[in-house]
Picture 1 (cartoon, rainbow, N blue to C red):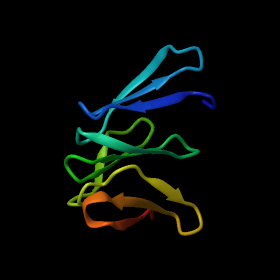
Picture 2: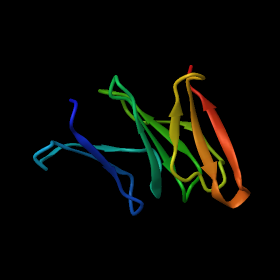
Picture 3: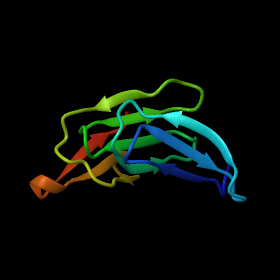
Length: 103
């Protein structure tokens, strides 16, 4: 629901959703740990990038997490480009960007 806060942890694969009051309401897991980037879509789908392992997990509501991209060098942070329907991910070590289309 609107107003919830989603937190990822670089130390494991946990994706934690907290209510506005600070109560833990849901724990999900990305496919990989070492996470740094997070995008939450309007339908509740979460995209999580692993800066340590180089992948991007998609977590759809009520479904298991799936790895939708891999072998991205140091994917740090991440944003959603609504115009192109894609994730944009900085690759720190390469001074470049990765683009992940969401079809």
